[in-house]
Length: 376
Image (cartoon, rainbow, N blue to C red; front, side, top):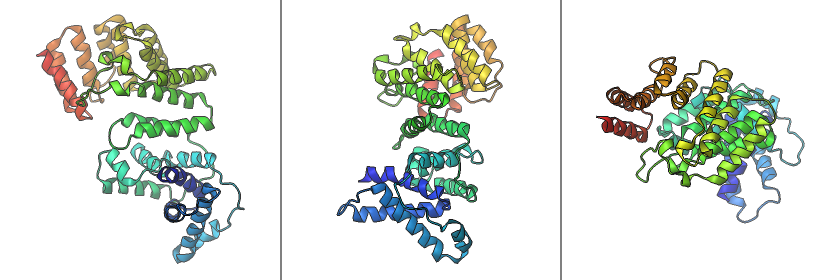
């Protein structure tokens, strides 16, 4: 019952907002309908649960509108109820996802609102996933709703923003009581099923190819394990195969984009049975392509510098890294690794300590400090 309601809740919300319901009021109406379902369904399950939820939620929304004098003007606009029939679902969910990823929202707000409205997570769950107080997350979501208050849910758009938010969600984390990376994969898979755009498939492939290494990323005590030191027998080969298959299908459509290129790089790493067997020449070639598609991106320049070092030696990698200004996240860690492999242990140790001070997680901080200590 809980799983079914979690799946149907966001889809019901999507139907209401597509019909013109104001976001917060629609969410309240859906919550009331879900409570009604919890009370009634154990005794008598309706023949069409999605349609039942939409019908009840819509009635409750109309009740709210009619009971508030201040909303009377809005009632005139939304009170024409569409004819009854099968509940629309997939397209409405995508409309909702699109709206939650609106470019006017900050990335953090867009991710939070997507998890709340589309993934169906509670505010408390999202707060735990992002390691912030529940009140802080509640305020963030409320601000996002206010930003979208006057927006209508009448068309799909902003595809690039949707992909960016989904990737941020995935990149944010594999840890915590709520796995937002899993949610990002689920939503991207849903998006890919509805729209076979090669970049959507590219993003899904990228997520799968990275997620396949998840079991090897940390030790049993939670310490970070670098890619070249991971136990590759722990990688999920079925997930890798699926990612590669999706990527190959995307590449054949000859509409190359940044997510397809990143997925191609991930696939090359996953294809090597040992770190020493990585085809760095091809990796560098794909980074050159990525730099062409997304010019002046410091993260890409940094990662390319590592590939340059693997192909032409650490000094060449350091020259490539010189294009990245100080202060860019992870620059010190990359510089430390390059100096270490260039034979400058003292400078590498200093940079590892500097990188540890700016680490985004405890696991990363401990890993960098251990690297620094080993070189002293």
